[in-house]
Length: 199
Image (cartoon, rainbow, N blue to C red; front, side):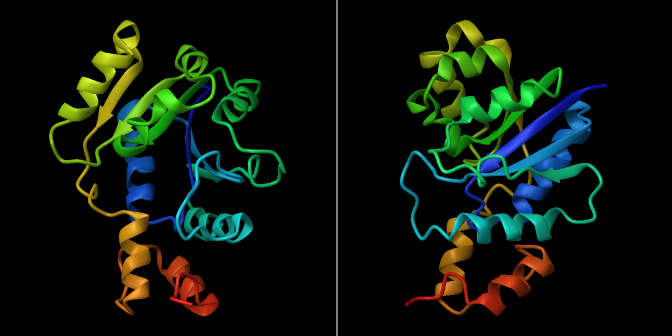
């Protein structure tokens, strides 16, 4: 079997929702593993974005010890803008079948991505729940933009869809605990390095 999935994103910071959907995707779709790819230099502006190497370190801490998870620094180690088509092509040289995991919120911007139609032709999507509306908004988006590719998209409902990196950053700024929202090691690193605190 040579069937893997990429879970990319800013991971600003990585949280238990990311880890849960990765594990659930392996179980549901029979994947060999999920490769976490922290965005290096994002094409779209991100709020409160930690340095890319700091974000990657948090991901490394989070996936450590989980055999079916890996981290790739492919985007982080490059100086150029991170475009997913480049990342996908890189992994397609190594694996015969590559799935792409995305949250619904990110997916609704997918038509703005560079070479998005080429991406759709080369991968299948696991779209993780974010809105709690039974994927109505996402289904409508697919109908409008990707009617001819409907067989490429799979929905992944899960119970942790309300956890977000934004929510965690806000809790940190308000001096509220983030225990059980992120892995213990990630929490320790964030506290020790004083990440996301108000200036």
